[in-house]
Structures are given as structure tokens and as C-alpha cells.
Length: 150
Image 1 (cartoon, rainbow, N blue to C red):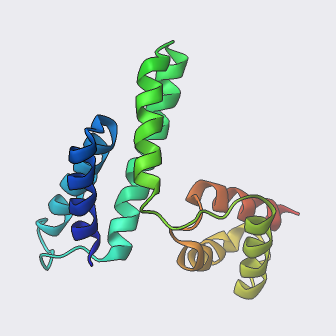
Image 2 (cartoon, one colour):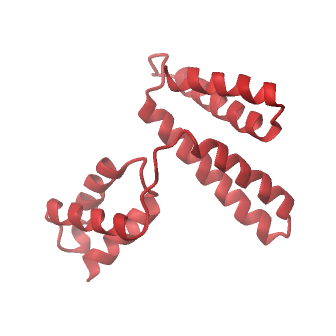
């Protein structure tokens, strides 16, 4: 079952359950996937990898929006964004954080042979390829910088 088919099934389930938040989030995912599949230069389908990247972007957008809403005292809108994040996160791979991520990034930096900040691109390339979809890119970059500066 493709990601788009899976999302469509979940939309039907959310409609039957009358879950408005889930329905809105799922329709948003489906919209983004369809736009990506019909974009110029596309072969008409979105790979699961590309779908994961799209959904990670959607999660990041919602986190940013929730932060702004909280700063402006609109907790009601921030709660909606956070609820949508939970729905989207169901379709993402398990995220690696904390000590485990730090250990993996350290191994990748060692494998890449990078020893200074000048070689950060090489280490980031390998880290992004190996950890893509499993960890936040900003967090990976911060860890690579920390390791290369030490």
C-alpha cells in the first residue's frame, strides 16, 4: 500500500469517527502528496522517501506556527497545531533523539573523516543520508558542529 493510499484510508476512518482535527491534517498531507506527484518533472508518483520529507516539512511548519501562537497568547490555535503534528507524526519513522542521536552522529563524523569545521559539509552529507527522516536536521547540524569544535 502506497503512502497516498494509506492516507486515503485514514481520511475515511477520520470521517467516520467525525475527527475534524485528524481529517484536516490528513487532507493536508494528501494535498501536499498530490501536488508533489503532479509537479513539473515528476513521474506522477511520490516515493515513500519523498513523502516522509514532505511530512517532516509539514511538522516543522506546524511547530513554528505553534511557537508563534504561544508567543502571541493564542494557546487555542497552538493546541490545534500540536494536535495536527500528532496526526502527521503517525506516518513518520520513529525519531532518534538525545544520547542515542549524539552517539550515531559521532560515529558518522568519525567515518566521514571530518576533523574541522571546514569539512562539516562532508560530515553533514553522510549524517543526512544515514539519519534522514529519523532525526531533525537542525539537531544533527548542531551535534556535528559540537563534535567538530571539540
